[in-house]
Image: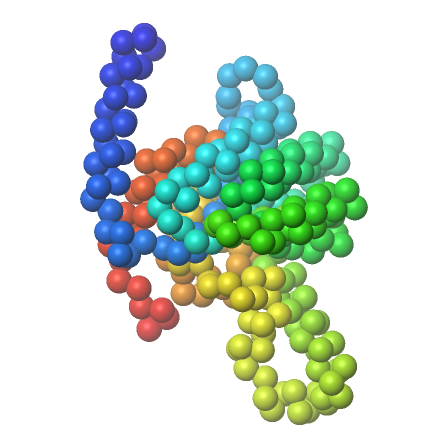
Amino acid sequence: MGRARRTARDAAYAVYTRRLQRRLDRTRLPKHVGVIADGNRRWARGSEGPQGYRAGYQAGADKITEFLGWCEEEQVEVVTLWLLSTDNLNRDTAQLDELLVVIEDLVGRLAATRRFRLQPLGALDLLPAATAEVLKEAATATEHVQGMSVNVAVGYGGRRELADAVRSLLAEHASLGTTIEELAEILDVEHIAEHLYTKGQPDPDLVIRTSGEQRLGGFLLWQSAHSEFWFCDALWPDFRRIDFLRALRAYAARERRFGV
């Protein structure tokens, strides 16, 4: 593609982006956005230049930094990023090691900006000790940051989260001397919610998944019961600001029924 053609394309993209921004109904934008950042490995297989999954993982990490900036501009309050599922822990060891290195570097860089309050979500006991420590240190270092909350879901699975919540709930009541029969009589949805990884946070208003897959795959199973979903064909490293604005536009145009 020639330089003139690229310049014209970039100019048209900028104009359309500004138009989308102006037309957004800012009274109806999501406060919590969940993201299934899918397609990094497929991007690496099809991209020009250096081959190998590491290139895709790094491109995906760079896109996350960019994406969080877009969310800040649109005054999103909470972002949940699904970076590694419990199922992904069964990948080839070399691939998994490459991904974990990229995740550790990403989390460290996000913490160093002091722009975000980071919280790890997932079964940290399933992760290598070094990765778990990076996540914990980032949470501690940013716990008093007043900026946007960013949940980093690493070693996360929705079923595992629910199992952990029930386990925590039972342990809590056992320590109080509550019998199983007594607990069964009082148990309600709020008891479960108080033991989820996201306790104290609002449920996601909008969940975005890239790469053309139209399924949640276990992402925030409990919390997404009333969420709106937006699926995008772009692989995560190719996800553009204009795609994000389209997702916001689609969300703002919907009538949320909250299960009704």
